[in-house]
Image (cartoon, rainbow, N blue to C red; front, side, top):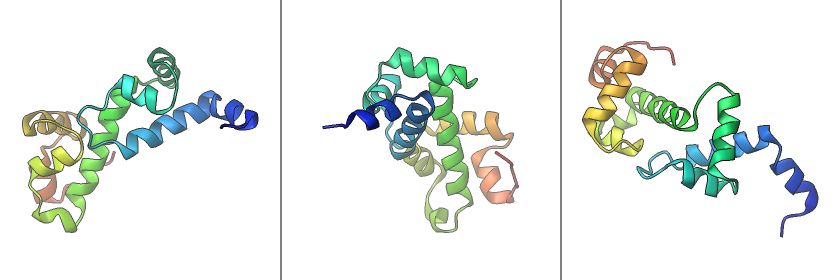
Length: 125
């Protein structure tokens, strides 16, 4: 059972956003990750959680896409996953198709994932 002190802290808007971000981070590879699932994971309504993210100037799903792209950027830079294909990295980050992953990556960073990996382009998030 949750003690009353923990409940009030957990319901603080900043704490809820932090919990949601942690939940998202731990579920980025889940292609079915959506507003309802994230809200259920932090025990609030989807509308309330979306409202909280909007007060920070970003939609909840935009935050999810940015987190996925950032993880992909880090994986493309890492030495270990050099054996992983671009498509595999996209899947690890929750993208269902390589084309969608590549399109969003290029939109966010200005280069394709393969050019980013091969050219050693230093792209700032």
